[in-house]
View 1 (cartoon, chains in turn brown, orange, blue, cyan):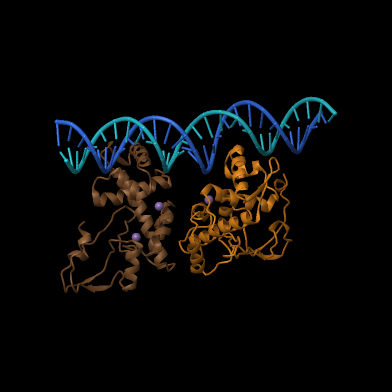
View 2 (tube, protein in one colour):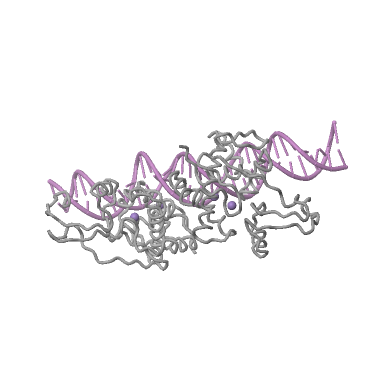
Length: 196
Length: 196
DNA sequence: ATAATAATTTAGACAAATCTAAAAATAATT
DNA sequence: AATTATTTTTAGATTTGTCTAAATTATTAT
Ligand SMILES: [Mn+2]
Ligand SMILES: [Mn+2]
Ligand SMILES: [Mn+2]
Ligand SMILES: [Mn+2]
């Protein structure tokens, strides 16, 4: 089993997430996401490339290799299982769990994680509705409709939160909206700031 | 709140434990306990001294300051709470918990630890019978009798394991002795290897 | 197509934590 | 007390992950 430093794990996980939106991941995007200077990103990408975790060509950005993706999924699994634990067993609110899970995710003892998974009853999603990869890294993302594309009057159930910034999560708290809430679009106002 | 690196925390905890037996802690003893070269110990002791965590004078060893002890007790608290969690909630055996807790103890979020404590029902001891410091760092060590000094025929209850090496723990497993077991000294054989 | 701008990499430096080998201080033996 | 052995510290080097400033490459605008 390959061992990674906390820094390496944070890179792998961040590349995984950025890849979902941008396909190929730019050095600057990683720098922004990790609050790290672009020069440092280049250094680390070379290292992860040599370790076979990312495919990287200078000036063209990077993508995870098959092994890199496997590793990233392991980290995402740990992160979300701990978030579930903090929320369901320790009573943390959904805006608090992320910060703590950010540390717990780096304790990488396979037996620990699989026993935690069982203890939690093999949950399928974390407190934000994000799917938890299983022990083999398999992830099940159910078919969903984005709120922005939901037509007026239709009733829907909230299953996942796209923007998980503290502001959005607290706003949802105030409006008493959580995972499982039934909602209905009263009026669809086109928000210009979504487009630019 | 002061923040420490994983390395610093491991030093503080180890100094705390060694202090219990030796009073003043020698550089070499720390080196042995931490599997680290004596030269590295000296470097770190200077650093911890500058931070006010240990009182250190060259060639004379070190002791924890009041703040250093406070910090060490926090680490011990986290370690033992996680051991209890692993044992009671996840079903780990008592010889497995230490290794995992060695990593978990470094996740230092106060709210996490206090909520974990409550979730576990404010346990007084870890799976090896060692006392768990409370949120204020207060530690309650009940009066006990060492097995070596227990007189023949007397019945006693096992409350704590002194030597927690895997060998000893597995031997106790085999003999079906655990915390809470009632035992009786049949015959007291003086073991020479205890003295040299 | 050239020039200006933005993104990325290289070069050189630094702090943290470790190491080995050599020097210095302390402790133990004769 | 002098010598020897042990412990500890200093000196100098290494690895990891980061930084800033300068150079290079790619992109955008004129
Ligand atoms: Mn993290
Ligand atoms: Mn989440
Ligand atoms: Mn540790
Ligand atoms: Mn223990």
